[in-house]
Image (cartoon, rainbow, N blue to C red):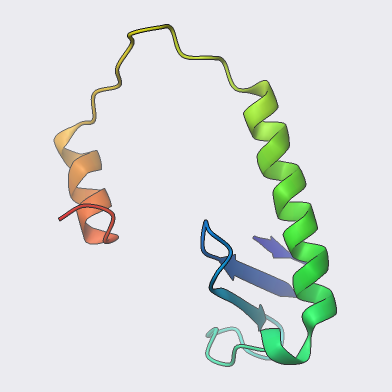
Length: 84
């Protein structure tokens, strides 16, 4: 999630969180989360709010329905490390 000059990257379980200042570090090399816990906290709250809003507005799947992925989608997930 990027807001203003900051970009937060957080694992789904919240265990690994990184924060970057895109103005001074556009290459996202220096993780400033340890020195800016206030920004991390604020962005986590905003991210959670957005996720809850998305979930609240998403249509519920029909019972027994499935979603088929295209070969391209499967390959993209594999490249991102989500599938083996």
